[in-house]
Length: 132
Image 1 (cartoon, one colour):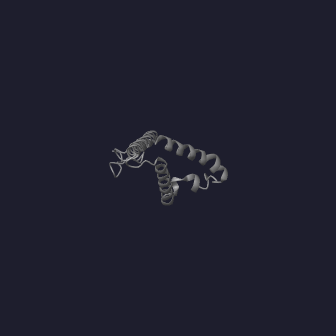
Image 2 (cartoon, rainbow, N blue to C red; image 1 turned 90 degrees about the vertical axis):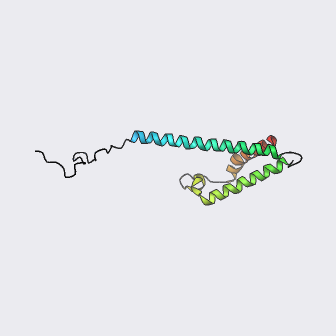
Protein backbone atom coordinates (compact mmCIF):
# COMPACT_ATOMS: atom_id res chain seq x y z
CA UNK A 1 0.00 0.00 0.00
CA UNK A 2 1.46 3.43 -0.96
CA UNK A 3 2.20 6.02 1.70
CA UNK A 4 -0.62 8.55 2.00
CA UNK A 5 0.01 12.12 3.10
CA UNK A 6 -1.00 12.99 6.64
CA UNK A 7 -3.55 15.50 5.41
CA UNK A 8 -5.68 13.80 2.76
CA UNK A 9 -6.80 17.16 1.29
CA UNK A 10 -3.30 18.27 0.36
CA UNK A 11 -1.20 17.24 -2.58
CA UNK A 12 2.48 16.62 -1.90
CA UNK A 13 3.57 17.34 -5.44
CA UNK A 14 1.88 20.72 -5.97
CA UNK A 15 1.39 22.06 -2.46
CA UNK A 16 -2.24 22.85 -3.27
CA UNK A 17 -5.33 21.81 -1.35
CA UNK A 18 -8.21 20.07 -3.04
CA UNK A 19 -10.40 22.67 -4.71
CA UNK A 20 -7.62 25.26 -4.69
CA UNK A 21 -6.73 26.72 -8.09
CA UNK A 22 -3.55 28.08 -9.49
CA UNK A 23 -3.57 31.87 -9.84
CA UNK A 24 -4.49 32.97 -13.34
CA UNK A 25 -2.77 36.29 -13.95
CA UNK A 26 -4.43 36.81 -17.35
CA UNK A 27 -7.98 36.74 -16.04
CA UNK A 28 -7.14 38.89 -13.01
CA UNK A 29 -5.58 41.53 -15.27
CA UNK A 30 -8.66 41.44 -17.49
CA UNK A 31 -10.92 41.82 -14.46
CA UNK A 32 -8.82 44.78 -13.27
CA UNK A 33 -9.05 46.41 -16.69
CA UNK A 34 -12.81 45.93 -16.85
CA UNK A 35 -13.13 47.31 -13.32
CA UNK A 36 -11.09 50.39 -14.26
CA UNK A 37 -13.19 50.99 -17.37
CA UNK A 38 -16.39 50.71 -15.33
CA UNK A 39 -15.13 53.17 -12.71
CA UNK A 40 -14.07 55.69 -15.36
CA UNK A 41 -17.39 55.23 -17.19
CA UNK A 42 -19.41 55.76 -14.00
CA UNK A 43 -17.38 58.83 -13.06
CA UNK A 44 -17.90 60.20 -16.57
CA UNK A 45 -21.65 59.71 -16.28
CA UNK A 46 -21.69 61.42 -12.87
CA UNK A 47 -19.71 64.33 -14.34
CA UNK A 48 -22.08 64.66 -17.30
CA UNK A 49 -25.12 64.47 -15.02
CA UNK A 50 -23.73 67.08 -12.63
CA UNK A 51 -22.82 69.37 -15.52
CA UNK A 52 -26.28 69.00 -17.02
CA UNK A 53 -27.91 69.80 -13.68
CA UNK A 54 -25.72 72.90 -13.27
CA UNK A 55 -26.57 74.12 -16.77
CA UNK A 56 -30.30 73.58 -16.17
CA UNK A 57 -30.12 75.44 -12.86
CA UNK A 58 -28.19 78.31 -14.48
CA UNK A 59 -30.84 78.60 -17.18
CA UNK A 60 -33.47 78.78 -14.45
CA UNK A 61 -31.46 81.28 -12.41
CA UNK A 62 -30.55 83.67 -15.24
CA UNK A 63 -33.78 85.59 -15.49
CA UNK A 64 -34.54 89.30 -15.18
CA UNK A 65 -36.65 88.57 -12.09
CA UNK A 66 -34.17 86.24 -10.35
CA UNK A 67 -30.49 86.89 -11.11
CA UNK A 68 -29.71 88.69 -14.39
CA UNK A 69 -25.94 88.89 -13.84
CA UNK A 70 -24.30 86.18 -15.95
CA UNK A 71 -20.72 87.47 -15.55
CA UNK A 72 -21.13 87.52 -11.77
CA UNK A 73 -22.44 83.96 -11.88
CA UNK A 74 -19.38 82.85 -13.87
CA UNK A 75 -17.11 84.57 -11.33
CA UNK A 76 -18.87 82.77 -8.48
CA UNK A 77 -18.43 79.44 -10.29
CA UNK A 78 -14.73 80.10 -10.91
CA UNK A 79 -14.04 81.13 -7.31
CA UNK A 80 -15.91 78.10 -5.96
CA UNK A 81 -14.04 75.73 -8.30
CA UNK A 82 -10.69 77.24 -7.34
CA UNK A 83 -11.44 76.98 -3.62
CA UNK A 84 -12.67 73.40 -3.95
CA UNK A 85 -9.52 72.45 -5.90
CA UNK A 86 -7.35 73.98 -3.18
CA UNK A 87 -9.22 72.03 -0.48
CA UNK A 88 -8.81 68.76 -2.42
CA UNK A 89 -5.10 69.54 -2.88
CA UNK A 90 -4.70 70.09 0.86
CA UNK A 91 -6.65 66.95 1.79
CA UNK A 92 -5.20 64.57 -0.83
CA UNK A 93 -2.13 65.95 -2.63
CA UNK A 94 -1.51 62.60 -4.36
CA UNK A 95 -4.39 63.47 -6.72
CA UNK A 96 -2.09 66.17 -8.16
CA UNK A 97 1.04 64.17 -9.12
CA UNK A 98 2.50 66.87 -11.36
CA UNK A 99 2.64 69.19 -8.34
CA UNK A 100 3.67 66.73 -5.61
CA UNK A 101 5.53 63.74 -7.13
CA UNK A 102 9.27 64.61 -7.41
CA UNK A 103 9.72 62.34 -10.45
CA UNK A 104 6.81 63.83 -12.42
CA UNK A 105 6.81 67.33 -10.94
CA UNK A 106 6.30 70.19 -13.36
CA UNK A 107 7.81 73.58 -12.62
CA UNK A 108 4.98 76.08 -12.38
CA UNK A 109 6.61 79.19 -13.75
CA UNK A 110 5.61 82.26 -15.72
CA UNK A 111 5.89 80.46 -19.08
CA UNK A 112 3.57 77.64 -18.04
CA UNK A 113 0.99 80.07 -16.68
CA UNK A 114 1.08 82.40 -19.72
CA UNK A 115 1.29 79.71 -22.43
CA UNK A 116 -0.65 76.86 -20.81
CA UNK A 117 -3.12 77.86 -18.14
CA UNK A 118 -4.10 81.40 -19.09
CA UNK A 119 -5.37 80.64 -22.63
CA UNK A 120 -7.43 77.71 -21.35
CA UNK A 121 -8.86 79.81 -18.52
CA UNK A 122 -9.63 82.69 -20.89
CA UNK A 123 -11.50 80.56 -23.41
CA UNK A 124 -13.33 78.61 -20.70
CA UNK A 125 -14.50 81.81 -19.01
CA UNK A 126 -15.56 83.19 -22.41
CA UNK A 127 -17.52 80.02 -23.09
CA UNK A 128 -19.29 80.30 -19.74
CA UNK A 129 -20.14 83.97 -20.22
CA UNK A 130 -21.41 83.47 -23.76
CA UNK A 131 -23.40 80.34 -22.93
CA UNK A 132 -25.24 82.06 -20.07
